[in-house]
Image 1 (cartoon, rainbow, N blue to C red):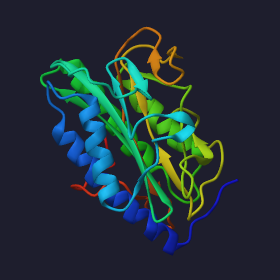
Image 2: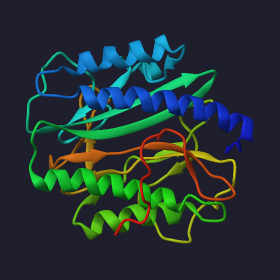
Image 3: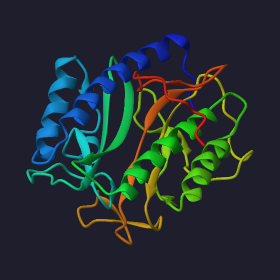
Image 4: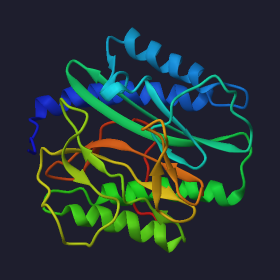
Length: 257
């Protein structure tokens, strides 16, 4: 069931989103060769709890940590550990929190030290895919408009769009209806309405889009082991342009070429 949020409820989600933006900004700045993902996890949990919020991932269906830490060919749901991360790799960090009963969910992929230009492009294009998809999240448009915008831009650059995982509705629960695929046909699917709150999260692989789940039951990895980038924000659909609730940085243009 899709729930439409009132302006007051969106205000609460905006507060949660601002806090998550601060947490993820700190995590991004802390990523460097030699740090461990467990250190990043402890940092995130401390910041969230000190602000009076709750890490929404920790304990969710048995997940053991505050962040998902997914390196290189791991798409999502990686467990943090004590292995120092090395230069030349990438790390996707996904994090969520609950503040005053309302959820925020966001993810990014960051380089660790110097990385090849083609991987820099992968990260850049993934973020562009998000902004192009988000630009379609307007009242009267359809879910397929979002997915088409993401897919068209990724495939134009020769990248694969992961299909087994999607974005989602969000509110008092981390995962609500509807599912928000990163592929589709323009003009198809559920019609978007003001008051809907969703998480759009392109997961873009350098190679093929097919994935599998590791033996731990959580980590999702590309079948061809091509590296993958992930970028996500929570947003609210309004009567005008969408509001990105988990982004409070410099203005980002949605008119990506």
